[in-house]
Image 1 (tube, rainbow, N blue to C red):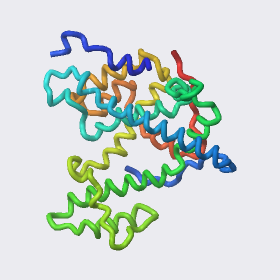
Image 2 (image 1 turned 90 degrees about the vertical axis):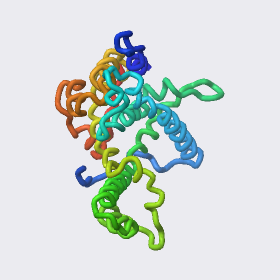
Image 3 (image 1 turned 120 degrees about the vertical axis):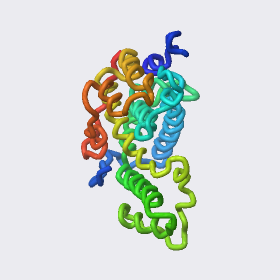
Length: 267
C-alpha cells in the first residue's frame, strides 16, 4: 500500500548515522443466517485478523526509521504511546477497499464479496464494551498490584476489581492473575493500551480525510511521528502530525450507536 511505501522509504544518507464507558455499539448483523453463511463470515474474519496481526509489527518501525542522534531516543516511543502506531494500522484492515486489495479466493482469485465484507465490519464491535471494560480492569489491577505496598493478596485484588469494573465476578478457586503476562515489563503501565488507542484512533482520522493510500499522508505521518520517535513528548508529535491537539472524539466514536462511515480511499 502507498502508506507503507511512504513510511518505509530508505532514510537519507545523513540520517542513517481512562473514562468509564457507558454503552456498546449495537451491531447491524442479520442473525437470520444459514450455518454456511455463519461459517463463511467467521472464516473471513479469522483470515482478516491474521492479516491484521501481520501489520502490527510495522507499528514499531520507529526503530528502523528513527533519525534521533541517540539510540535511547530513536529505538521506540514513549511508554504512553508505544502501542499507538500498531493500533492505528489495524484500522486499515477494516476498510472495504483495503480488504478487497489484500484478499483473494484460493480458487477464483476474486476478492472478498461486498456482502461478506459488510457482515465482517458489522461484527467488529460486537463485544467492544465488554472488551474495553476488561482492559480497564487489567489496567486497574496492574496499578493496584504496584501501588499497594510489598504484600498484596493478588487474588483478592483481582476479585475486587473484577466486581467493580466488569459485569462478571471472578470464578472462586481460580487465579487468573497467573496468566497476566504484562505484569512484567509494563510495570504499572498496562493502562497504556487504552490510552495509546486514543492516540491511534485520532491519528487515523488524517488518513480517513487525506486518503488511506495517499503517499503524501504516509510521509507526513513518518516525519513528525516515526522519525523523531522518543525525542519529543507524544502530545507534541501528534499535534505536529494532525495540525491540532490530540482529541478523544475518534476513540469515543467507536462506542456510538450509529454505524461508522467508511470514506472511499483516495489515490
